[in-house]
Length: 310
Length: 291
Image (cartoon, helix red, strand yellow):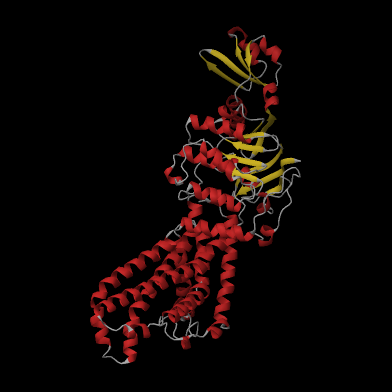
């Protein structure tokens, strides 16, 4: 359970045995994360499948693209801007929504599935501590999935742009409005910020809670993840006729008011002015959330130590 | 240094006592069979030794406290919990990669060598392998780890006799040496009789027999008694008596072999018969006490 103990080279008990290669904590972590990717291939398959669907749909829609672009020229720049960006934002939103759902299901199964199929006994026979295991599992929704989402979204958007360009060039319509209204580099930067800030940091307590439940529940982790929250909300409502807890949850899931972006939740990714990274980083909500995440994860580590296969 | 040393090891689940003051000492280089009826506390004892469960009392494994020093201990200890714990989604090649990645004492070439003797394909997933092949795979992985203590909890449960035989053969020929210790629990005691160096019976959380196999062979004698000598043989207080084809077969504990030889044919009994004698008597006494 102690992170330092993993990193420390250990003197072999028997001096005749040559000292074994010391395996660093980073290397254990790396293999643990790879292990998660082997097990849960939906981490990249689901967003890739959605991206493929988006591209198929978009490809069909390019039939009308030259007409649409000619029509767009009649609109004012603001409307043009929105019309051109709309499919790109929609693609990003769809992929992001998919990976969020993947993350939720991943977390609920992460520490539950290994107990249910008893494979925890195999993993525990290897020198990987509970802390490393839980952290590697937490890194999937907090780091890996945001990065996967980012990469897949950016590639999808570029393919969409290149497809559109090819179609427009083929039909003799100017591509200038398309390119001038689609600052893809800028949009990518915004997307990355959103993913790291909201999905990686702001949502961390949600994933921490799901991991904790998955390490605790003996059955139906999905129900256990939701019912206690509902119960707290109901009790609060009946006892005090208030809804602070529900509001707090809503705020957390909605992305936080005055959070990473001033219009959080509405996924317009075209202006840096909407971002408030400093404001976000000093907001108490973020840090309280991260502290709660740490507590949830610490509890999950402890549970993994004590819980037996079901 | 003893490999495993326990004093007054206790573990309770609610009101059920799983381990009731177990004392044991296993020296390095032994193959210990831990034999007991279902629910006797075998798995609990192994879990305590492996640091998978908390316990009361004193326990040292390779000089370490298995619960508090588990992360260090697990580098020198291997275990096969039972046949079904390898995750079904794991590919054979992934298992090799992962172990090479995280285990400082894993020798990949060795594991590949063991696997080459089997029909297991590198690209197969565990779910595609037969039960026997899963055990072969697990054993190949474990034998490639240079561990000091190997714990096997019902390793051959549900395997056919060929795989079972092969399992113990490769364990003895390819793995065991005097610097390693093996602890095995099994119900298939006939098959391990000639594998073990030490024997322990556990019943209702207590060790009821603890001896080396040499001692076992000295101590227990099975007598196929001549019909006219039955009364004389019974007077020596056998711990078990049964009839086979109309002849009485009596099991004795610490009775002079020469004396018994005059009453019939003597031989070393099987572990299974001694088990029935020792544990069966206890159960009878317990029932008698309950009445």
